[in-house]
Image (cartoon, rainbow over all chains, first blue to last red; front, top):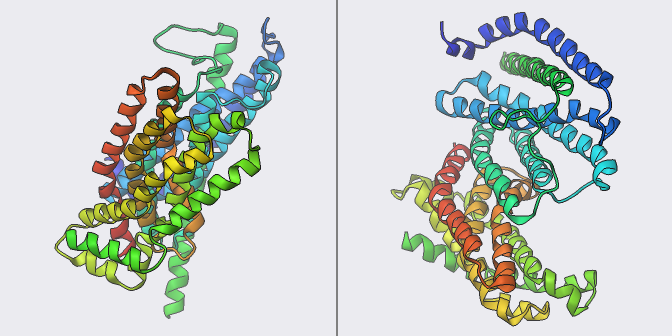
Length: 241
Length: 218
């Protein structure tokens, strides 16, 4: 029993099909639960009711970064061990990551309007998220424009590696370029908790919900990709016959 | 390697517009900017370093598709791939040729265009230094983007979407170098970062670009 068994599409389809209903149910329960629980929390004494957008903003931002890391790992597995499922999972994850980045940017703008008095500010965190979005778009566009599937997987894999280095580099370069307006991390392991418990627990729940949501979506999309590949193979066989 | 370099340089000069076009584009951009933002010295002076860097970046970008596209079309890229010189070396030499044909003329012309945009005299040497250190990274990253998109029919727009985000750190440190040198006279930190990025890019990107080329030549 090893993780590489899931490189076999049949095995992957069987296992992911069994996991999928639980992931979907968990995602719905946790996301809805977290956000609704978040809305029932009392207003913050300085930020008023606007604080409640944090239950969408923070999980989306967390997923936006972690999805890129997942794509990096999947690309590495594809480039090193040539497991097709891995490449397809990276392809399936990219649009989800782009949407998460968009959600984080949009909720941040909606919150920033009343709080900072501006929709947009060239703050390092905001800027690096915009740059991350550009990397996602480039990655998706490259997948869409290369016809041969294996070449596309290789090229996007290489792009993902180089892009990861430069996304990280840009993250610290923009720190150097402009001073920040964005507050520090909402949750931090080292520096203790900065949020009161009434906000923290709904936030944990909705972070778990977003994580499960991503798992469910990426499984559905990967399964779709595998079926599409099978369909293409069947059509090619029929053409030959 | 030297033969490949001279071949590329000769092709660039004799095919027409190799050296001149990038600089002409740069000149047009510097002419258009005052129309867009107004001819005030006070308006132009603070944005001059940024405009000059953006101009260099865009001029570099527009000539990228020439690095591999023509060689791919006439098949000489396949010959280069089977030649004894490793593909990584080919990529590095081609990026160097691109830098000599577009980067160097831009650097030579930049002080002149700086005058057009009222760049202060004390910023001139720093402009040249920052471009001199930064543009090799632009050419090398561009070669990577060109290697990825070489097989595509309409790769132009995709190329800019892939390459421009990679230019962000270089652009930040390049303009920051000029700004700090003028403001406080101490540009050491951005200078070191800019040089570090260029050194890292020149050392590592040929491998990524060669890997992409191998995929596209398969």
